[in-house]
Image (cartoon, rainbow, N blue to C red; front, side, top):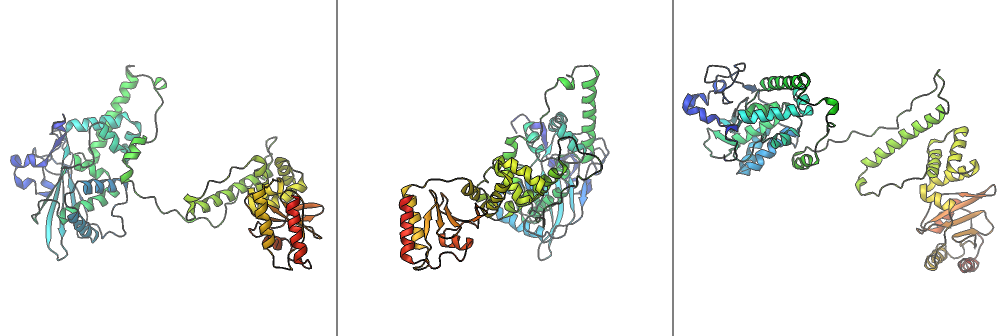
Length: 497
């Protein structure tokens, strides 16, 4: 390598000529190719007779389901494998062998993974995959990077490996995941590139990484205990230095600690992120709000009953939002209209059905007397914001809109069934001899109204057909009116408007 990191990598084969080829294939007797500074505390024989790190994992059962790896680290390993393999067909065959449970116990040690893989006919092959190890210089940079970032050292000491550790390590010149040329397969089947057996071994390692991502660091040259011990030593030394001689700035003088994942790292990892989990089923009903009827009196100015109404309303709205979000096609729906405080007071009165005292407070919030709030609540239940606008506002149609309205009124009924209508405003028509009215909104929909106690109140939902809207308000309207009178009335209405 020519990038200045020649000491960062050391193949295990470098020791084969010195210590014999048998040591490379001897399982737990494989030499330790870290950096020559092992403390002798781990398993596996090193050149000096000390034990090197090695872990053996029992054979895993056949893999079920579509995805072979489920964790971020497992998927990242597979992506690195599939991006650097020369023969994708061999990997597919290997994935099939691994999925069928044909990979035996997996031995993992620095620079090498080993397993016996059986073909479908039962033929067994020993397969090894060699991985470049990190040298002493690379491990120093990795440990310094981890100690400099409080989030990393806290996670590692808690036996967790955050995904963005990869990007931060790369920034320090340390590649944790394998790159092109990092994985070198060896198999007794004699295939020069990744054969199905070495591919199956690599896919099985992805499942091991699902359970313990520290397996990757062991392959790179550090077992978990040694790594955590070195982190602890460096972290302690850094803390002593910061608080002992004053050479480090005080914590209250330091800049603010940054949290989260930088956007660049998140974007770079987009291709290896696992899919979102299946959302849990929606609850059958809204949650029950807390009861504020306690022995302790409320703070002055706070109405516990009103707070209970707001809490219950929040639960209803939260469940409604969840159901909307889970509905198919939700992402294509327009954003909901933001309500004014007056509109929201009507909505709350319609949804919560509060007691009379709370209803009077909502009427004040809506800017209406209690009697008018009843009509507004009815409108809201029929059509939300649009129905409320028809109740409160009167708009002026232009000549083209009036022409379309006249045509719809003229065509809506069969001859002899058409009611007589008279103009009652710019976009309102009242049935002659009946306390029933049609109102047209700017979207061309017809809303039925009925007069009750001298007030016009909503009588039903909107309809594109004026006859259908009117039938929803009063099914007995318009009998006994001949077609000529009805037509003249419609024409006269339009002319008057």
